[in-house]
Length: 233
Image 1 (cartoon, one colour):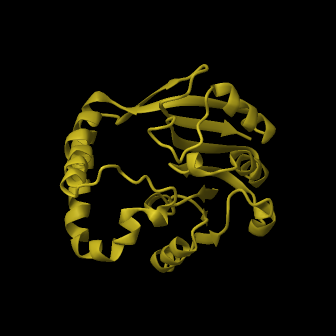
Image 2 (image 1 turned 30 degrees about the vertical axis):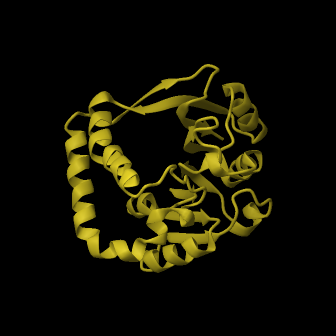
Image 3 (image 1 turned 135 degrees about the vertical axis):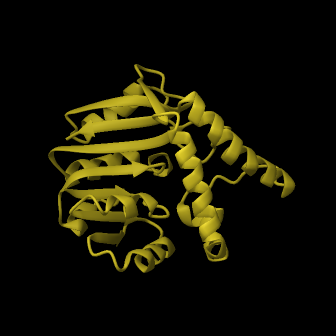
């Protein structure tokens, strides 16, 4: 398969997926993150990294390719012109190809930097305009066992760290280069073995409970949900 990812962030998903596909194209809007991704993935021959805005009307011409699948994880809610983004994705996907989007849909004041879909009909209208033939919209959540472990070993330590650091509010970065991890990734290199080992142990523990996620299809109200959209061109 020839696959497209928008907003690859740290590139973790791309690194794992590249072993299973023929070619993987990453579209990233941040110039500094493009430089970091090219340095990280320079030795992987089937990954192409493109510095571009997913809403740019010239994107299909620039890529000069069509794709069997496309996806974006935790990025679609941060795109200001989501109609233009979906239009581009519709043009870049071959007939019968699939698009997967996962993103938070929480209204202000929880996430003031996000543009929120109020109803499923708003999202349906954009997908139809973009030329998709069929799609589903689900609420995605952790199962109770996975959620309990994630809260105890990820969310709770982060809350304590922020309290210790005396931050009154958490700055939700709109793009990956604004995140704490990106700005301090050089400092984190020395702890790479410890951090990766901790994540590996946590993921193994979570999987003891079976599937991590559960989903149920939404009819109208899509607010205050972690949304999963799967659409076929």
